[in-house]
Image 1: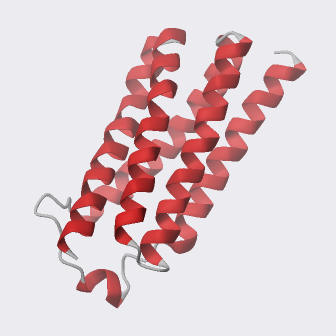
Image 2: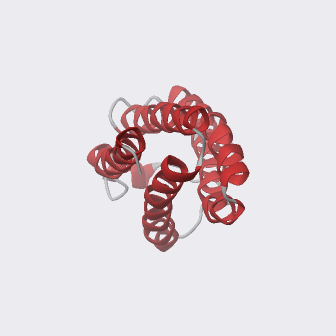
Length: 156
C-alpha cells in the first residue's frame, strides 16, 4: 500500500476514533433531562445502543481501510470526505441535542448525517460488496436515529 493510501486509511481510522470519543463526550442518556423527555413509541431498548454502536465503529474502521486499499484514489477520497462531513454532522447532533437541547435543529443535523452517508454506502458496494453489506447496518441505524430524533423534537 502506497503512502497516499496509508494516509487515507490512517485518516479514516482517526476519524472513527474521533467519532467514537466525540459522540460520548456530550451524550448523557442517564441525565434527568433526557429521562424526562417523552420518547417516541418505537424507541429501542437501551441495550441496543450498546450493541450497535461498537459494531458500527468497528465496521467504519474496517471499511475505511478497505476503501483506502481497494477503491480508486478518487472514490477513496470522496468516501473519506463524506465520512468526515457525516461525522461532523453527527457530532453536531450530539451537541445540539444534549447541551442546548435544541431538538429540531439536532434532528436536522442527524438527517444531514443520514444523507451524507449514502455516497459512502454506494462507494463501498462498488468497491467490495461484502463490506457494503457489513456497513449497511450503520446506514440503517443513522436513519433510525434520525427518525427517533425527529420524534423527540415533535414530542417535546
